[in-house]
Image (cartoon, rainbow, N blue to C red; front, side):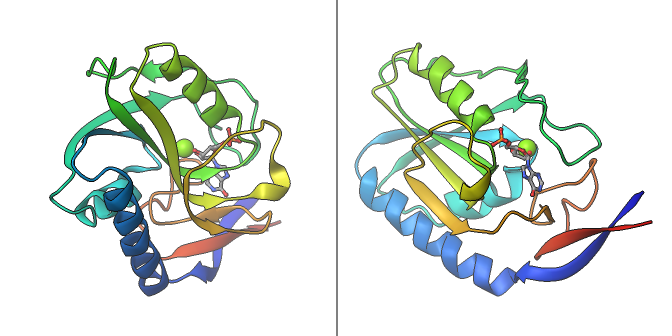
Length: 178
Ligand code: IMP
Ligand code: MG
């Protein structure tokens, strides 16, 4: 079975508008504060790079990244989360915003929130471009969310299928050929 890119679910224009709105919300929430924006590699990098440029200069932004194990080459989760790269920053006493591409089962985010909370940040919140609420297994709070989408596998704008299609500017549905 092979995967193929199908229709556009969210266009680049639609994404850009929403990311600007999210940047404004983040700016309001953290105005005058020091904020460590933590991107989850690799899916969040494109979203994060647009998001932080939509955050006003009144927020003192630092960037850091974590890498966790993901689905590998298929589209099904194993539920296992392994840290492949940890933060460079000590987040104790800092405001931390975790940036994810998509919340699916919620297992990855709930695990990451739990381990980062143990490091005693001043505050800890999550921002995800996409949310698939139908698939949720772990109860996680996402303070800033771009779009809720139906239970469909999607690629583009950072999201991949087996490492492919992260570079597409729009977000597409994925289908299979047999
Ligand atoms: P969760 O732990 O099930 O919430 O999985 C979140 C991770 O699964 C995301 O960071 C993505 O890497 C991946 N993922 C979930 N759904 C999709 C999708 O539709 N397209 C691409 N990656 C996805
Ligand atoms: Mg990912």
